[in-house]
Amino acid sequence: MNVIAQGQGELIQPPDLEAFREWNRTRKARQLVDKVMTEAEAVAQFVADGCYIGTELYGTVRCPMSLTREVIRQRKKNLRVCGQGVLELDLWLAAGLVSQLDLTYVGLEVFGTSHALRRAVEAGAVTCVEWSNGAIAWRMKAAAMGVPFIPTRAMLGSDTLAHSAAIVATDPFTGAPVCLLPALILDVGLIHVHRADRFGNAQIDGITGFAFEMARACKRLILSAEEIIATDEIRAHPDRTIIPYYLVDAVVPAPFGAHPGEMAYCYERDDAVYREWIAASVTAEGALAYLAKYVDRVPDHRAYLDLIGEQRLAELRVA
Image (cartoon, rainbow, N blue to C red; front, side, top):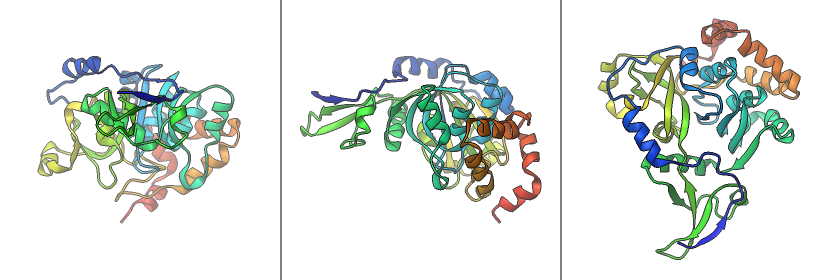
């Protein structure tokens, strides 16, 4: 296969598929073990300084925000991050937790661009390697398939390619150029779901994003769930179980765990809290004040919900 071009970006997380296979063989339990724990317990046990970590979401939908805030409380440092996110990555950047970023999109959807990312990059506090949204999901798909790279047409014709670590090569069958995306294996993945049992079998309603791919492309997987239900209820609808128990390391009960984002069929996005962040994050001082209010001064997710207030949460619930 003839190499035509190669991106100039650093490969932040080189794939080692043999080590990943060995990890899955020896470190992932196949027994039905109770994995329910708190955010604090899960983050303390499975998130380490310097690890490569990713959050799974679709815009502001189904973001693992209760886990995101706990990572900040424990001040995990020098995180290398899969950057396909909105508020959660903005908060990590503002807290100074991120050192390297495989960047696809960090922004605030309808609310504007990220002040926190701009400050971090301009200050040299974080280095970025660029990918498209599709490319980063395909990289996880490659890891899930157990192949070192996956050939796609993603990013061809875009200058994103030049700032990535992808390779353009000649397709040996057609002679056309094809983009080779390296597999992406995460040390830790954070995913919020609608429901799970205590073993980790999990179901998602509505948009599933790239939960299927990420769940199968990470060494450790922490799930937060709107509700914990009986295994018999899960088994009553096996076709809806997108994440099986043997991929999961921790299950965290987290009603309103995506707040201030939305959860399909459960509650709407809290635009007021997003706008508060937008206004605060214009300056580094304002961003830290926001973190103090919504993260550092509340010891856990229950206290966070108390801060938001039951009346406001009730208003966000979808009938």
